[in-house]
Image (tube, rainbow, N blue to C red; front, top):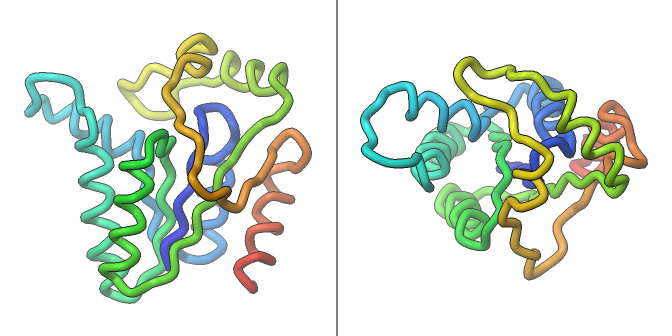
Length: 166
């Protein structure tokens, strides 16, 4: 099974995805970590672009083919990144579960973004302005959505476990 978390920074997706991965003993792939490792390697002349997603897709596929559950954690802001995860699940012959994490309370979301500290060395946390101007295309089909304005991270994990039949 491939579980892909999507949503703007500060919605709580990393907290939920990390705990779900721990509870399911799944491989956990965080796009921010992969992208920062690529930056730190200083092998690209420009920005990371889609490279982090490409690496995550390849690592996810190799782990899925070994029979592992994989949880991917990233913004997944565009149709192309979402389609790539669909292709990975199809290639591995596994179920894809898309989870969109939102925070419908704008004030709470802004507060989370503004209080966020850098948990990845070298990566500067986003600003509220950068979150609000971040590209994020609407979904063609509504994914399973978790709203962290109404659920705690623990409640969100329990909800997802119930949805997954655990």
